Length: 586
Image 1 (tube, rainbow, N blue to C red):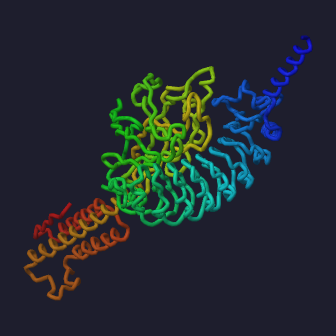
Image 2 (image 1 turned 30 degrees about the horizontal axis):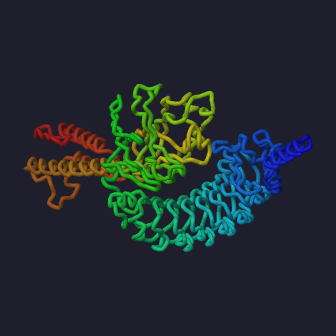
Image 3 (image 1 turned 180 degrees about the horizontal axis):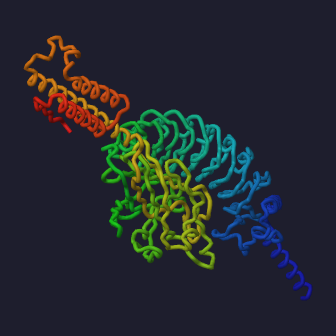
């Protein structure tokens, strides 16, 4: 009996040890190398099996996270997340020993170097996310990842052409290669994306034209903005629910929404904007309904639900807004608006901050039909999603950049930090020059901060309101009006001189009974009245000066008046007996 009990005890211990130590040893060794290389030993205990179900790093909310598939006798690492933990350096080759990996998230770190060709060994990968400092081309071996459903290599400084083999991703639903330095044409193999719903290629250097066969029936959103693409928008693309071609040379006249089509052409400088140059201000209640501030500013309605790649134009066509990107955890149901019922402090206008426009990537506002000149730009913020808490919910950080007219005015901007807490109003004021009647304000997420605290998709730019007003006109505008005034003054002066000279000759003719005027009209015939010659000479010379130097009409009239006074005094002296009196134009 004792021997049986001992045997059962040994077997039980063996089974327990086997249950806890059954991860593929090659994968365990590779993971330990990665953890040591990235100095994450304090976050993952390397003394126990990484697939231990009781380990703290296995839950979906964990960061770093390691999750496994233990459905067979041996566990395999299938999920690896090391997100926004400032890991540095190149990707170690040991990563590619995790051949059963399905989900890899190394986003928002400072990894560098090129993406290794060995990535093609991870053929079971379905989700891949990264926003780092990679450089160089996309490896053609990326095409081996035929199981991919989501691929995000946004803002990674990648260059070169998109590999043709990437079109083998028949299961791909989401792809984001935006904000890189990719060149060449969009591969024709894209027609193989039979399941693709969201495609983001904006802010690269892609050229050529969009073709009909690039479109897929499942496509919901397409962003090719800010690329040197050209040609006409294919008919099939025009039917896409959400499309953004701002900053391209694509002819957008095929869009079903004529208003958006016209506004695209306006922003791209292809056609004149409606009532061009007619406004000196615009005000937007970002993400909310129209409101009037205590100071009397009318903030326009901006509550329209934006698409994942969209351009919306205001009712009066004085401004427009474009969005690119979608929150992957909720790709179809987000209106790109954040809201709260809480009271906003540090302001007398709490309602202005209770709704905000948000974006997972890139949000641009355009002021249209503006008079050129210098403007004051007020940006209103309040962090209404992050929480002030001493617990884990207070660990979230929203960081984004702001550009005005292409100039970065805020980098790694943290509303909560600058305002001194969440749900506190903050106003940032800047100056900007408008030279082509359009102002662009760009809110951009550079992949920094957190993504999922206090809940999923809590990241990206957020803005409550915008108010821009002109503080001074462009030099060209004021000088143009001055030039018009100068021309008017010269014309008035010239007309005045003609009237005066006519009056002079008329009066002389009336007061010259002795025939002092020579029939030949020689100036010498005025030898009894030299002041006439001096008057005509003075006015003639003065007007020539005004024509050359562009003096104002007031100055021209002043000279004419002085000339008349001079003529009058001289005439009184020399023609006292005739009581000659000239009434001139003053």
